[in-house]
Length: 292
Image (tube, rainbow, N blue to C red):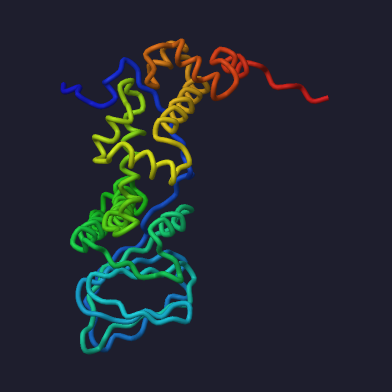
């Protein structure tokens, strides 16, 4: 078996996942329609699901929040639950579209994450073919009667669509925003490789195609600390997670977060938190105070 994975670079790797969401997100209705020129206007006031339409051909209009939008081929329009919205095809160029209706406690979160709101209901993909393919996969899975609407495969396909929408949105930014995306690449590299004891400003700059001086300057402007200090802070927070959620020794933890010397790790830990790793472990073991 090929074991050339990033996490095998050290003898011990440990990560504790922070979940922002109690996950509930799944599709319930799927469809495709080639509309006739005489199809009536559709009103969605009674719909209790989130709805996405992807226009494959033609054009039409969406009316929502007292505004009217022209929607064309390769665009998506979004309608939240119970919205007083309506939409109709252009009679001279009637549309064909795919649609997905979905629900779950996290639906608002995922829609807002890619900028879809009642006041911003149109999404224009930069790579429409890729988004159309992801959209179609959700619908085609629904045609397989082996799967229910909230089966893992259906949920995964819907989530994959939203990942594709988010990546499409963030991958084609221009000007100053491109710089922010490039800094995100720096952050991704640091978070992926923080456990590598050889990680340095020079290696970060090299792998993310930055000049070291320039990287330090814009990183500090953006995050308020230098890349080196950010790395130290990240390692120490990861160390705290391991102390709270595992029984590894301090020596093992120091190696796992990128320190070859447990002594130097302890010194840095105390510098940041005014307490040694051993003292921090002892605070975790103390029973809670009894109420009077």
